[in-house]
Image 1 (cartoon, rainbow, N blue to C red):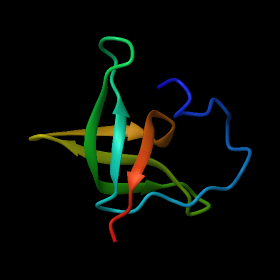
Image 2: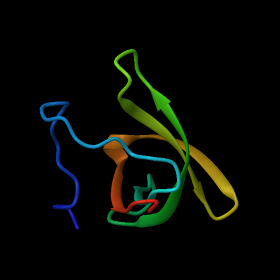
Image 3: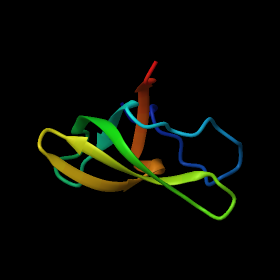
Image 4: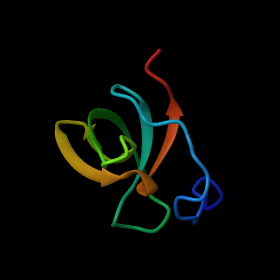
Length: 76
């Protein structure tokens, strides 16, 4: 599982996350525990790139940086 997430800063341009994308979310709890979540809102920087998103996991919503997320599938 440690190979799903790269440890680089913003070296290469990737496709922005979109609303309703399904992602794996890194939890602060037990190591290697990932939760399934859906993107519910986007927070863009001055350049228009998505750097942080609001994800819904069950009934809870969390604000997470995109470095703590792994995209599984798009919204369609």
